[in-house]
Image (cartoon, rainbow, N blue to C red; front, side, top):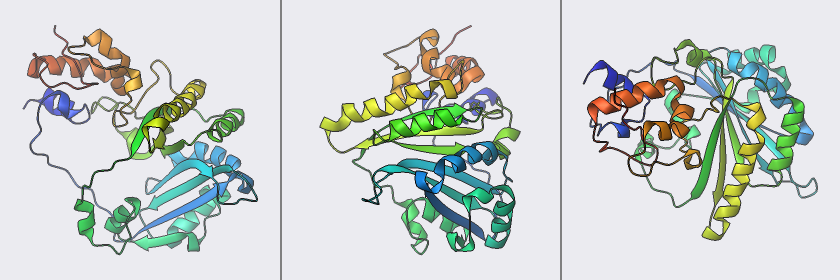
Length: 307
């Protein structure tokens, strides 16, 4: 297919270039035993300070450990009232003994104990993170049932830890909404790959990514819910990447701009530079060679850029 086209479809949104009928994936080795855990912390349990520490160390933890965060509202205690809950979820490529020792040395503030952890095979961890029981048959992973849920997602990248004043302001906005945040640490293998090796450019220099999510059940709630997540996104502007304010392609955010018919390259920069940064121009030139008529397009597809 040519080196440029192969490069483009490995992270550039293959639907902009044609129909992909086959794909070959290179596997990587995993140990026979992995360990997972999930530890929730509320504001009363020191969630703010633990969050501040996580920002500084999550991207620098050993490559065998992935430790993300999910942030939302906790209404579980009527006497305590509504508060923030920060859930720290981890996957460690190894046994529980090694994990507990590592966490005591690098992130003792979280208070991880053996009883918080579960050892399993790697494929069982896939079941667990997908919301199934680790005892379920693996065939459930082949199910692709649709969902009627409605949601709005936005994204950001963070390069410097957010100060405590920014975090406390975030809590105030979250307490007035139904939105949730998922924070994914970078570093590790992500930082070892060049930002131009594939179209995905968000590599070295990012300490974590943020997904903002809000769900609703009825059409009457849609505008209120979308306003909530947009308010969160506006508040976070001073604390995230700039020039451009980067975004993650797989969390399609039509607020960034929409392709109306045959949008020009200059117009498409509104979202293209956020998703692809310096790789956007190369993607558009590949598009001009393989689909000059712009047959394959969608709401945020890559337009052709001719010489």
